[in-house]
Structure formats: structure tokens, C-alpha cells
Image (cartoon, helix red, strand yellow):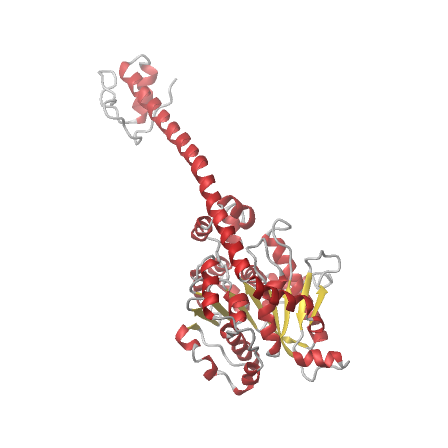
Length: 452
């Protein structure tokens, strides 16, 4: 017995059922009644043939679409991915001498950079690099305590959730250290060692370690800020929004008896800084990455295989769904380059909008023409401290009790950044490094070569 077809299905021209037994039947019940009372009706057989042809056409279309996807998508993605890594290789080769200088500073700075484990039974990934300010380093060398505790900045490096390392932020930490800020660069496990949730657990433990131990290295545990770069900004932002959820505080108090359980709160931080961050794993962003050669299959492995899971890992969406989260968040500074090729600036803009709706004090700063790598590679190589100045000013405002104005700091205002620095910050500005001085044309070529 044939299953009656839906009357809304498209008809094939010339195959409309006709005949005295079938007539102008438009109702499914009449089709079923005709099938039961007159199974040999020619009109009914013709209509059943219509359905069979429709199914056959649909099946052929599906098979053809699958074949075309398999035949063209895989080679196309292979070309895109090969182009991505080829550009990355050219970029590294082009800037290799400068990058070697940064690596040498990180590897051989000695007394000014300390490496410590933040998990007793952790892997080599569960470590932090501590960049001591000059005053702290001199006092430590003399066996004395620093004259006064310094602000602390915890840095969470990026790396596309796969290739990151705490050494990525070494040139940024070099400038901030000279400005009198204790920098603690966090290393953590990446995919496939763990999932995004595992990364958050690692950074959660690292932040708690910083609260417990910052004072041992001359830092002030009451003046700790958190900075995330790229995917590190996603991990740090997601950690903050999850810990700021209503009810998380009561669960935290109940677990204080367990020594290994982090007990810090987002409100314990004086501020959060996001550099070129990812804050919402929506379909547009995934399509953008796919066009860059990062296949959707790999994205699902790393970011989550369902839309619901990816939404649960998106700080912007968590804020959108629960405005109470914003009540427990610290002030926020978001910076993004308009020339970023891998993370569109609308990621920071969308996160800023959600923060404003949740009544969080936030400032958004766009750097005209700068790319994804500028804050940690290009700008330090030119001794361009635009990003560092914005960080120093924000930390000063947060720690001095001055209210950070809501909204955007326009690029035109950044040219006058020095004029709005208070006298207490000018000494920090004067201490910023003036070397190296990589020529601007060299950096422009590097920006062109990089796939980021």
C-alpha cells in the first residue's frame, strides 16, 4: 500500500493525476479513501508514480550535492589551509631575526623572569612566568622586600586554542615590567590535550595561585588585573562570566574547605583587558574561519560539536541571557585592530554592547590599521607603546578609584593619550623601552604576509 503524498509537494508538469476515479482530489483523506476503495485506479497509479519520481529526483540531488562537496570542498580547503601555513611560514622567516631577539629575552633574562608551577601535580603546561619590575628585582637581589607593592597583571596568551604558549606575550610583558607592573604570564593546556572547559579550569587555578602568591613577588593582591589575548581573551572572558553567574559565589563559599578549589571572585579583580578577543562563537565567525582554511570539522572538534555547546562557551551570549552577571564583573578595556584578519573587530564591538547593556564599565579602543599580532609582536618591535599606554592608564584609573567612562575611546583620542595621563603615570611612560626600532615599512610587509 502506497503512503499518500503531501499535497504541498511540487508537481511535475504533465503528471497531474486525472481520471473519473481520482477526479480533482485535493485532500489527503480522500487520497487515502481512494487508495483503500480502488487500489487499481489508473489515476492513483499515476499519482504514485509522481511521488516516486519526486523522491528519485530528491535522492539524485542529495547524492550529487554530497559528491560535489567531497570532490571540491576537500581540495579547496586543502588549498586554503596550505596558503594559510605558507603565509605563516613566510611571515616567520621574514621576522625571524626580530623574533629571535624576543626569544632570547624570554629565555636568558635570568633574574628578572621567574618560572613557577601553579599546580602541584600539573604538567609542564601548568606554569607561570613572573616578570619582576626593576624595583622588585633590585630589592630581591639585595635580599630585601620592595619598598611598596606594585600592581599585578595576569596575562593569558592566545594561540587559536591549539598552538599557544606563555612566551607569546614576553615582549608585551617586557614593556609593562619596565613601567612598574608585575606581570604573570599563564601557560595552560591546549587542544587536543584538553577542551575549552579544561583550559578554563587551568586558568582558574592559575588566577587563584596569583591571588595567593603575588605578595611574595612584590605584587599587591588587591590590585590584580586580568588580560587575555585572542583565544586567551575568550578563555579569560568565559571564565569571568561563568564565575560571575548568580549562585556561583555560594557554591564557592561552600567549597572553601577544599584547598585545591579556587575561591576568588571576578569582583576581586580591579579590571579585565581583552586584546583582539573572541567572545561569541556564532555561525558567522565559524564561516569566516572556514574561509581562512580552518575547516568546520576542526572547528567543531575544538569549539564544540553543537550550537548549544558553543553558545554555552560564548561570553557575549552568557551576558545576553543573564544580565545579573554584569553586576559581579570588574571594569573592562577592549582593544582591537581594524586590520585584524583572523578575528573580526565586531567580536569586541558585540561584547562591548553586551557589557554596556549589563551596566558594566567598559571602554572600547580600535587601533586603525593594526592587525592581530600588533600588540605582542609588531608594536613592541617598533617600540610603539599605544597598547601599553592604554593598559597603564586603565590600571591607574581602576586602582586609584577613578571611574572609567562607559563607551568607546575613539582612535582620534588615542593620539592625545599622553595629554590625559596624570602626573603619577608619567614616570611609567618615561620608563618604557625605546629599543628596538624596526622600520615601519618592514612591519607593513609583515602585516601583509601574516594570515592573522
